[in-house]
Length: 255
Ligand SMILES: Nc1ncnc2c1ncn2[C@@H]1O[C@H](COP(=O)(O)OP(=O)(O)O)[C@@H](O)[C@H]1O
Ligand SMILES: [Mg+2]
Image 1 (cartoon, protein in one colour):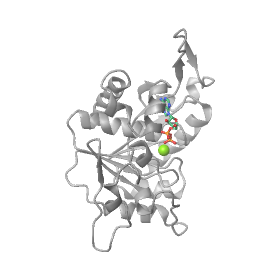
Image 2: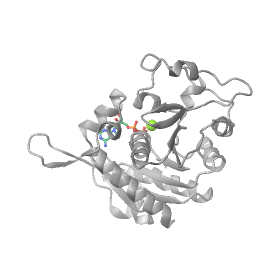
Image 3: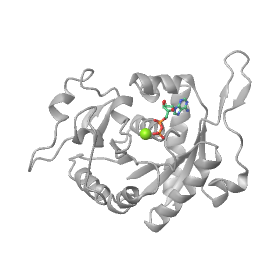
């Protein structure tokens, strides 16, 4: 079970989680994707799982009944489960204060995944009680960090490293997302953020940088439209995420 984690929200954690899960699936693995981000359970939207778009999910997308283990929804070859499935689409999740992580982890533990080779978990950003409880309760084998090259993203990602260390979960590496974009007119590389001095980055802590994913209109468009880029393309961004999957496999085997 591999967590995709970040200190800050909006850095591309869910985008990378979806792309990595699909890249593993393309390699022939049986893959589950668990959207544990109760702050922003975006995976259903990114996978095109909406009530209107997927009538089939209506039967599953209900509060799980007593004694019945909920089954994930199959989409693009992945088994998908989201914190959002615990309530209806558009409804807010609420838990008793202090117990959210434990209750959430317990509800995820009840999901009947079937046989899986990989379970990719999109964790909520940050290091509060909920995240700490999830890290200790889920039984994670490793974690992949997602950061944008911003001071604040690295600062918060370091706290995430500390959280995983306390939970005895190895951080196998990180992805630098949205560092730059290629100008559509002349192809010149444009940096989107002011560079963070190397010594203030998580890379300086020894976290291996497994991939640099540029800002790409294709990636933005694919998550907005609910048809993930890796499901659509095996070249371009698809090939880049296949390389990330290779790097994750290698890093996992070495940790
Ligand atoms: N490499 C990228 N290129 C273009 N857009 C991206 C890229 N990575 C993420 N995005 C976009 O940035 C926004 C935030 O990404 P998301 O995966 O939802 O972040 P998080 O899960 O960390 O909050 C989304 O609209 C997503 O489509
Ligand atoms: Mg997200």
